[in-house]
Image (cartoon, rainbow, N blue to C red; front, top):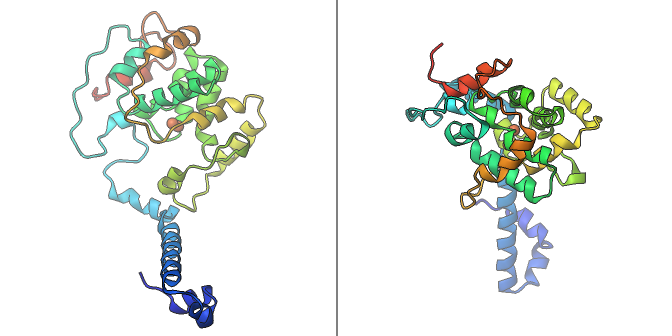
Length: 269
Ligand SMILES: [Fe+2]
Ligand SMILES: [Fe+2]
């Protein structure tokens, strides 16, 4: 590392200051100076700019919004999927289809439960990101739509708006803007106007705390040592999720095709 000699000496009180220090104190001062220089170098270079993130678009063979089950980001071949029961229930999707999102959602729901959240918030946490299997862009809205016929309005509200609230800190509940977003969107990223307008609306809404609590319990990194299964949530699902008798995808609801897409993503048309 290059040391700016004059700046370093000035920080110690100039040559006179240094003359008063013994050898060990000088070595300590040099080390702490180098550490703080290193920290500011890391801080300055840590995040891409939003423009740099934009430049990455043409380096990929897929669009960033495509769902996890639809494309292999690592370039590996996709695997043949296990067959689903004739009348699939929500838990079957967790076991057989939500390969990339189930851990994250189960762990978020587990955390929400441990934090004493209401059953509706726990359910919203359990469901909040699974739609990213088929679509990631605006996943709050897609996710709410996927679940709307089967959950309360409040749960759908929590799912829809958790995406927006992720961009806005709320110190009252200890929620900070995520580090990951600086890496993903760029250090200087500003959410688009529709997200800002949505935030202003949700902030004043009587149900503001529902999506906010999903954001608070939303985990970025899951702990590989903690394996959470769907079983602890079966009771909450039973009380708050209206499972259609015909199975998800076959109940003739306005979103049945979305479920069938998850069941058969290899179907070309
Ligand atoms: Fe999300
Ligand atoms: Fe999440």
